[in-house]
Length: 226
Image (cartoon, rainbow, N blue to C red; front, side):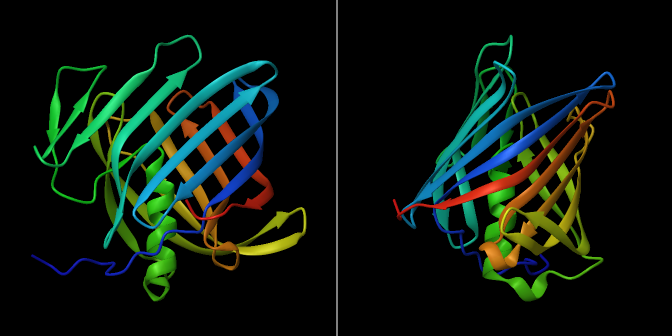
């Protein structure tokens, strides 16, 4: 096979990120807030994310697993949406299989699969580990396990843009991510800032019904390893 595009991964240091959230649904806008907690000890990681508007938690998810030579390797992804029960996606690497609590199907593990939370941190880990590979026009694919199936997402590196943060403007790589047919998203746009450990400083997500959620970073709080 062809050599892997990225040969090194370096996970960003543990952090709590706080975001402003703007949700547009059926044309009406609601403001809220979100948080991402990223923890690891160099071998294992835990990610937990929460997004809410008004008094509602719209989406809550967590991902945990291992960190290896090729970066983030999820073992469990749990997602809870407003009005729905929690779903679990399990990565059984010893059985080479991904299983879903919300579906009877399973999918093979070929290596490099991500979940609906870990993909952001895997992109950040690849950028930190192999920054020279990032250049405008680069296109590559990532296999992402959702709540019921596995899908191939295509990632486009657009170029660098300035993103306003509370302590000033920061240069960030803007990536456009186009999920495959199995996803209800139409597109993600993700901004990763090399000068801030490649943390996600902005994230925009649009679904196939034209609803969108945008997250803009407002606070970075470094955490100790572990």
